[in-house]
Length: 232
Image (cartoon, rainbow, N blue to C red; front, side, top):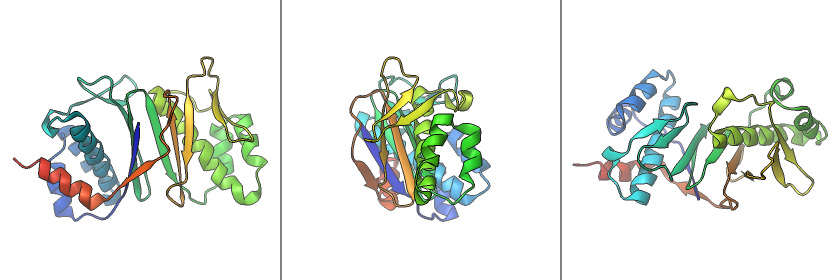
C-alpha cells in the first residue's frame, strides 16, 4: 500500500489545455464541465497522479491505461483487477491511495461551518455523542474526523453515496482504536492522518496494515515527468 499527496499549484490555461490532451477524452470532457479553474486543476492533477503511479508500478504506457467503473461509479483499471486505488481532493491537496485490496481515502479541508446540523442529518447518535462530549475547541476537528472516516469507508466498500451515512457507525474508543459497526467479520481497518495542517485525512482498507507514510509529490515535478513519458 502507498499513499500519495500533491499540493495543488496554479496552472496557466495554456498548460491546462495541453495537459488535458494527455488524458482520456472522457476525463477531458468532465474537466471542461467544471466552472471553477481550481476544480479543473484538482481533477487534472488527480488524473495525472494515478496515471503516473500506474505507469511506474506496472511498467505500461499511459495510452494503454483504461478506466472502468463499477455499478456505483467507483473507477478501476481494465485488465488489472488486483490494482485498487482511490482519489480524493479538497482545498489545496489531492491525495491518492493504491493497494492490491479494496481501499478508500478521503481528505477534507477544515472549515468553520455549522457542523452540528450536518452531523444531526448524516451521523448516527453514537457519532454525534462522540462529538458533543469533546472540549469546545476540539468539536470541529472531531466532526471532520468522523466525516472523513465515514467517507473513506463507503469509498472502500465501493458503494458511494448510494449507501446511507446513517446505516453504519464509526466507533472510536479512548485508545483511539477505530472500527465500523456493523462489521461482523472484523474486515475493515482505519487510519487517520494530520500530515497536512488544516486538513483531515482518513484511510479505510481491508488490508490489516495501513501505511504510516504519506508520500508528498511536487506538482511541477509530477507534471514534468508525466509530460516527458508521453512524448512520442
